[in-house]
Image (tube, rainbow, N blue to C red):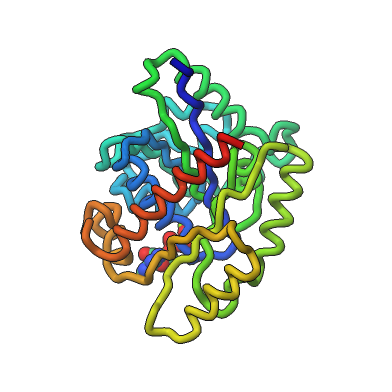
Amino acid sequence: MAPPPDMRILVLANQKGGVGKTTTAINLGTALAAIGERVLLVDLDPQGNASTGLGVDRRNRAASTYDVMMGEEGFKDVLLPSGVPGLAIAPSTLDLLGVELEIATQKDRAVRLKNAFANFHAQQQKLEPGERFTYALIDCPPSLNLLTMNAMTAADSVLVPLQCEFFALEGLSQLLATVDQVRATLNPRLTIHGIVLTMFDSRNSLASQVVADVRGFLGEKVYETVIPRNIRITEAPSHGKPVLLYDLKCAGSQAYLKLASEVIRRERLYRAA
Ligand code: ADP
Ligand code: MG
């Protein structure tokens, strides 16, 4: 039998805030876990919204991605179970805000996360294949800072949430240039996995035009699945739950399930290539 493929590392990045990075990290992670993947969500945003949204109380974040970035703990030591079977979270705290300054002069400042994943990978190899993580999703801060650079350096592929609004494409060229830059220097295998359009409001006549424009500009890189604006998605984090657990039948949950199967389909294509 062929050995199982290694854990795939996807990073959710967009330097704009409020576009759906964290919501997509939580719910894509949950949807992937629901279809049998074993997922590690890495919260790399000092705000810690992914941790909070999965119900991890701040008091339970004694060890966090801060310690991982500082080289003091491994992922194995900081990850916590979430309420979702098959989904674990490496939580973040506000300490992460200080990391950039603390490691600014270190030679390995951009490869801290990559090294942590390498160690984690080595530990995972000792486990039975069925116990190993198959995906890591990294939730980034709304900035192209050193944390995001670390994520892109560690990752296989970038997934870009783009909000369906008039200025959707604004700033995208800067993001794509950063991906190119990381690929040219620190991580030659980095690819763009896809662009996911979020918060689509069918009552807004502009929204369909935005979708058409983005597809016209970015072509097949845009996932077919469009995430609708959905009140249940907004409500779920305050219950410390992914929307898939909060209301499986709602349009938002169904869209994230669809996105997960599309991500897996693309994975097969990319791996076969
Ligand atoms: P980011 O991580 O990019 O800053 P978030 O995922 O935190 O963005 O989303 C910003 C806000 O929009 C949050 O309050 C979130 O609950 C809400 N939100 C995200 N996606 C949707 C959606 N599809 N429908 C309704 N609200 C959404
Ligand atoms: Mg966020």
